[in-house]
Image 1 (cartoon, protein in one colour):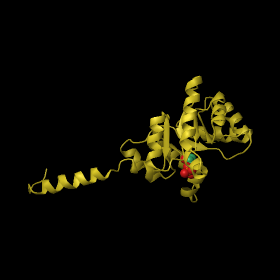
Image 2 (image 1 turned 30 degrees about the horizontal axis):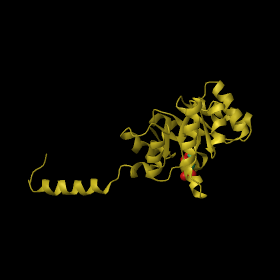
Image 3 (image 1 turned 30 degrees about the vertical axis):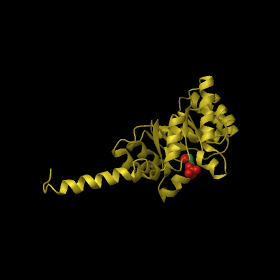
Image 4 (image 1 turned 135 degrees about the vertical axis):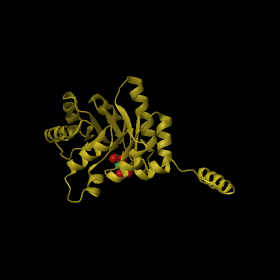
Length: 218
Ligand code: G3P
């Protein structure tokens, strides 16, 4: 399963890229607005693309098809790694189709139902992003949606990649793997939580205590 980092924070992206842990990055307007300050978001997208050799999702902010297509073209022109994120609306689906026809990769975002995911695939989306955590937030079963999309895409051979999104804790990532999501995007905090285990810490402490008895270094 591909791991994407869900952030526009370059320091965090560099930290994860250093060990080659991430296959790409996803952003959204809220994440960009958190880090941009006075900076042009397009410069931030370009910098992320220089750090990560993989898909970098950058979202359009227009609401109608024409504006989305025009913004999508501008975003795609920034760097080969850019994937244009469009919302799962009627206009978003039409923009998706138009961009794909021009050879531009897309991520159809804000997906909350399997019927929406079907249309994302029909529109030729490269990725579809079911928002697991936000469904959990309203007492739904977010992972169930990922499961259903996997089944439908497999039933009919759609090659749109399932990008499990809005993941809030390690078990969301584990369940995404078990279901067979193609990719999972997660905040930096969740990525590093994946590495943590109390027995690792305990075992390391014991090894180092024993090594001290030798009174030497390597
Ligand atoms: O990037 C989209 C998604 O992952 C947002 O997550 O936590 O804001 O629901 P969240």
